[in-house]
Amino acid sequence: MKTVEYIWLDGSDDMPQIRSKVRIVEGDTIPDWSFDGGSTMQGTEDNSDRLLKPVRVYMNPFKEQGYLALCEVYNPDGTPHETNTRAKLREMDEGDVWFGFEQEYTVTDPMQNPLVPEDAMTQGEFYCGNGSGRVVGRLIAEEHLQKCHDAGIKLFGMNAEVMISQWEYQTLPKTALEASDDLWISRFINERNSEKFNMRISYHPKIYSTMNGAGCHVNISTPETRESLKGLPKIMAKFKKTHDKHIEVYGPGNELRLVGDCETSDYNKFSWAVANRSTSVRVPAHVDREGSGYFEDRRPAASCDPYLVTARILETLSC
Image 1 (cartoon, helix red, strand yellow):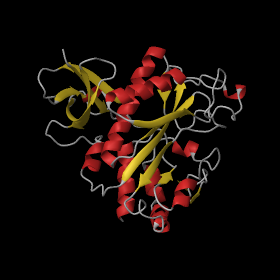
Image 2 (cartoon, one colour; image 1 turned 135 degrees about the vertical axis):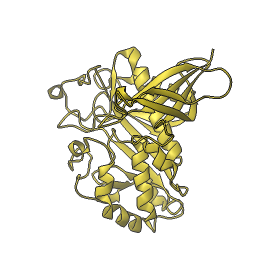
Image 3 (cartoon, rainbow, N blue to C red; image 1 turned 30 degrees about the vertical axis):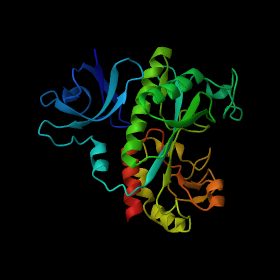
């Protein structure tokens, strides 16, 4: 028996929720399928039928002889649904720009309450830490790394983050569409894997008011930066000019995180520098020394939609 889990993004007002359902499929073709959009904020009771069109297939790391099918959502007339943010990116000229994400997340209880009270800790010993009292959720992070590999998503690595019970994993550089697809499926795998621990994966940008928030930094490599960083000031001028447009799509709740403190920049201002984690864009010190490579946009929140983020960056680079 071959099973296919159809995976799509719903119409939630903030961060899209990942939905899925399973179908038994015979043969090599994965057909389109319908679902109740009225129950996913993508339709109404009297106009609820929506279509799932599989666009990328992964191995299912939770089941033998199983697959994960990432789907786009369509209306019955064959047009992309308004919540289908992938459709716009799919039509764009990606121009050999590469993207690598640094996805942070926080392990919480099932109701998204922090596992450790804020007044019971002080930041300082948790980043890349080891041992009880310094890390929470290592089994979740390690199993996630392995299951992504089993699904065909090759991650760069993972580590415990600055805030306790917070983790980060990094994706390998790929084109915008493939990198964004991989990020959504890696999020799905993490959320599904956390069920057995009765824990929740939270992408809230700022769980603790006085401690580091959760971001989804994006590393960007263009054909030009892979040759030389001489043109970087010109690129940064474009990013400064379009700062407000970027912030619009960089994730709900981001204003709580980008406060100019706790390794973040100011929500209302654009800045960039070498090796500075309090700027909007950081140029890694080793890249600056080598004179070519990539730069890191630190503004996107952990809750961002990578389809919107990469599309906006491609628009800015092409202007």
